Image (cartoon, rainbow, N blue to C red; front, side):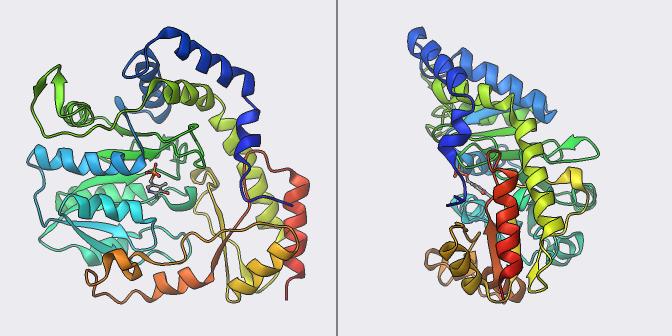
Length: 366
Ligand SMILES: *Cc1c(COP(=O)(O)O)cnc(C)c1O
């Protein structure tokens, strides 16, 4: 059996270091907002190349609290429009609606699955205030063009980096391009904790201070509450786990790239479209997503032959029951993608032999 993602095997690579770090926190007697969090925040900011990194409870909170902070700062208000790609995970859009902002779902580029500059420009109205590019599946969006559009139209940019830790354009990492960026460290992400965790990166010190208060009941000084904040803290044990795993992130990305090469060079079945990359260094291969018109047959065939696959994502956001009545939109590209995409196994512990076995099976599918 080739699993989609073997989390146990991923973490067992660092078993001793993780257990030592965990023991260090247990023995310290300090479990929330301590040295482990500050250390990880510094290391992660340095990794991304930003002035600040602020740990929070999860990726959804990282997105939600950034938009909330811009509201508290008077930069955006209820009803303002946020441009986001329609084929993203629902968290990107929940953060928008949770803040009483209006999501404007934009069709992705069919080759990269990301927002295109043309798509963004066509969606801008006088109410647009934010562009929220999701670096989907691990490939960074066209950030040079996006930042240029933002500048011309005076818009804020919030990157959703939940799938793109370490992806870059010309050496500048995802998370360092926008006005702010949100990361998830859900266990299955490229940088995964051993529980829930997330972070925001930014170079804006004023924004960082507002988020620091919001994540801790709206308070930066004990028992003085400036905002009606929330409890969204990244605990010491998860921060310690993340500090261990951050050291190995680049090595894990390079293993993922090798698997992706085996897939891209090996898959020759004409019924299957492999993903297109703009430039190799931009992609960190969180997911390897191919398109196939007989997707459900392919998934069943691979399952029958011991290969587990997933679909990211089978129901587009505008078709979700949770949003029934909200979106009156026609999104044929997004709908077609949801019916034809399938994610092949890829991970830092997947063997090259397993990848070759997947290639052979996929090529034999007809
Ligand atoms: C995983 C994910 C999130 C949410 O992260 P959580 O830590 O699960 O809250 C947000 N956006 C995208 C694109 C994701 O893949």
